Image 1 (cartoon, rainbow, N blue to C red):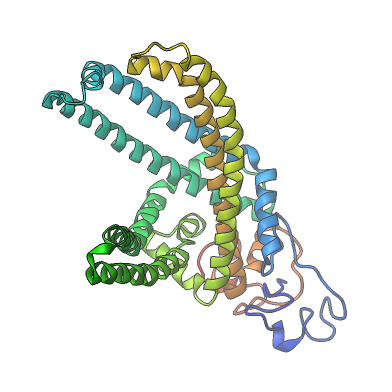
Image 2 (image 1 turned 90 degrees about the vertical axis):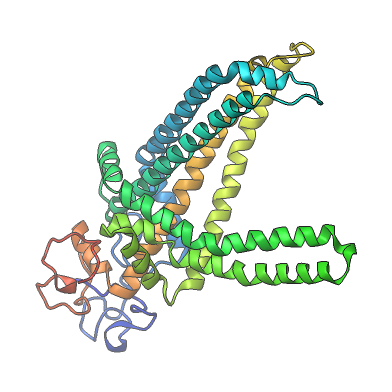
Length: 398
């Protein structure tokens, strides 16, 4: 039978089954000795420590690198090619107005028709870029938990399966990301307003007490809204993973995330902050060699330009630098997206193991021996949560 998922500490840190520390009363399996939890995949099916979370994320990237990095390269590479083609088309459409605007003297004003053409082209490119990045980000946020579902159970998954499942969850994942961004954007906007107020007050400090008052209000506003933004971000950080793991809709996923984070906010905040710092540092060091390599052909090409080069000549001369920088940014983006989302997905699994005894369900789904005991709320031969045997292991408790 399934062992309590809170092995070695219970669902909330206490010993399971009435205080017996090794899985049950005297005579039960594991009594008098240390019995390791089942580990069919990248993590043990027990409450996770920081090392378990990080090792699980790294193990998933190592064992499923083709699915994770292959999909990331296809998505970000395709997005880069799409935007490059769009820029080329836009440039061909506004080449003449751009030439006229660039060749203007300092005192001359651009024709309104030229300005409208350039602004329209930039606006179309911006909208296309936003839509493209929303789709790419949504697919990555859906694909990483999809791979992690099988990695926790130790099962293989095909690239085509990852692609198909990611597309099936794309709309609710994008909706969840948009809702989270809108919720967090309110205090973030207040922070930005306060920051601008502080800058204005600092510039006009000599004007007297009014500037000092504005600076004080701005600093207090930033101090008040900054923690609120961080609190909301952590509160809803599990929502994209919940959409994939449980098939929830955006609003329900936000509620579910708040429920799972409750009581463990500081731990989740610390781990996610550490992971994002690690991902940003790794991305910086990955991108640096590409930028350095791209500088040399750029320097050589620009040295051959005449005194008054055209925009097209500048773009061609700098194409080597642009390509190298874009490759570095793409690799960096894949790492900085994949690793934090793996950790977030593992934190979701950890919270369910701690609070809802998900470990035995996962052990049964993985087909590994379950250490002695009966899951909370289940009878022998009955699936936990009142469901049926063989049901999807990650579904929400009934």
